[in-house]
Length: 309
Image: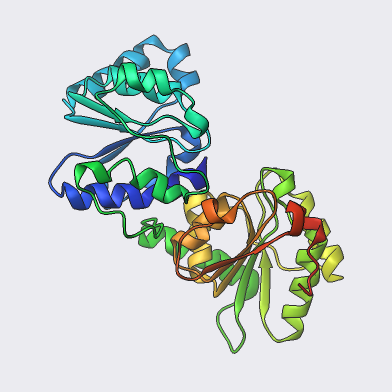
């Protein structure tokens, strides 16, 4: 997922610091490819679209040749919420001289790791932050694990596109803060009620701040919920691709978001960010960014959190 990849960026930074002149490629899925574009830490982000390759033998052959032609010395396979057998297979067909991996949570895939890899690391420690879980894979090879800060490298054009969109929504900077609010989340239990976001927006506007609302393409109905809570039609950020959306967050003074991929985008560009966590443990999943904080819902029920909280 998008957030998982951004949580892995400290891992890539640490590996690059350990091997500053090495070729460092990352195989990505279509859904998490965008965060690594233009990264200063890696050599290339290689997209792996499983469905496309299964339908197109010629493309599958080119993908395999691309991996083999690199003559990798080491393949590192990280895992977060689940053990990926696809990643195991990719490491094997890459032709890397050495391979290292670890089982997933609870020891999932332990026998596969033991049989298919030269180095098998221990099972992740429960409740350990996910950026640290990734870094644990690199520290045996001399990489540092002391910086968990996420990052994304935006071009000047991406920053400008996002900043221009935010300005069209709520104008340029004046005395008040420009706040970008995102009430969506792919997992419904991870959503603080849209009406509550609207109530919060109304309170912030009453204090002289300007608030714009953004949602994902499949969450348009959330605009209506936010407007009901605010008792006014709030300014809306125009639809943007992921990296331009990151540019909009970079131009904002504050980001208010749920526990979702957008949280990681806002944190990675350094914007002061406040997130609402429900059933997910923020000790593991909240970005370790210096200006990111969170509310944790009692009992994991976000509806139990009032605006006054």
